[in-house]
Image 1 (cartoon, rainbow, N blue to C red):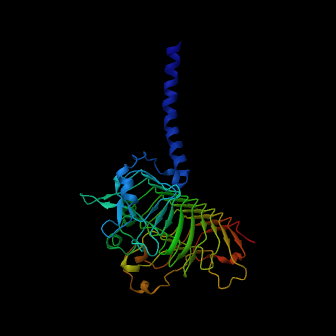
Image 2: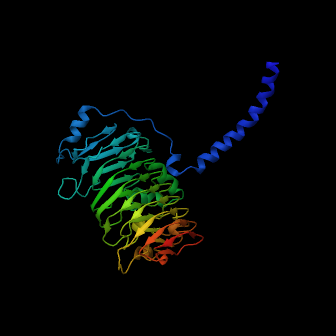
Image 3: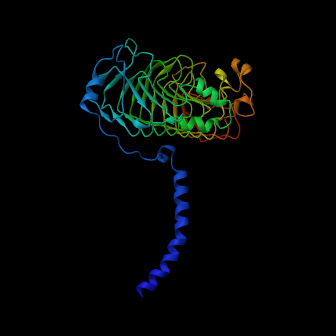
Length: 372
């Protein structure tokens, strides 16, 4: 009897397996971007020798240090060396500052350079060695964190050359850091953009962090061809000279949620696509982004306030659009932003009007937002 029962069960199980596989695929697709990143094994801890070198003051000869192991710092540590996290060998590392300061502020040797640079490197076969699954937490960063793959920004030469051919978005994403987690970090800006995700960066998660100080640019910049990033539960208490706080430049499928913007008079979150700046064609439009549950607070009596959220904020209104390269794709075909099919819901404007949510795109969902 037991044998007959087993033979009846096996066909049923074999029929169920394909359905189970489909369910797992569907479930994975429904998870937030950060949750879809494959977990990385924790890297080994750093040796006393690495700790000693890290804690030495930065000098002209030794201004930076490569980190390929996990670090746990002390609250009283002040690190003045630039931290470099490079290539596949750095994947899976965790840097827990425990309240320590990474100091690249004005007057230090590394002022003007990224305090932490997470970068892909060129492999011997011509491909890219990509860092992934890196975690940075509990740090005070006086300066900036920069993620870069093909290049540091949209005008970098390798980015430009790639952009002149079809398939650029895929190439940029394959070459860029991915699965980077930045948690409970206190950014203190002093001119430079405190967090810059270069072309092609995917699945970066920025949570529970605070942005203070002043930037000549934005607080966070999501550069062209980046996607699937999460910016959630952060406080933006910094000021900018003239820019919005978060730039979504040709970046798609990002989640920006539950953030507090205490002074967004120069702009909150702008979605656009640079139309060939630096001779680079931007391929991916800023579409399928979700901006939800954020709070924008404005000082009493604020005037000349820029939009809290602006979909298609440029639409070709830049001089370099006139000399941008032509191509049958991306910004080479049209200088328009095409910030379409985005979702803007349940955001609160304290001291501001609903007109501060501006939609110059198409087929965007704008609902449930309120002014107080």
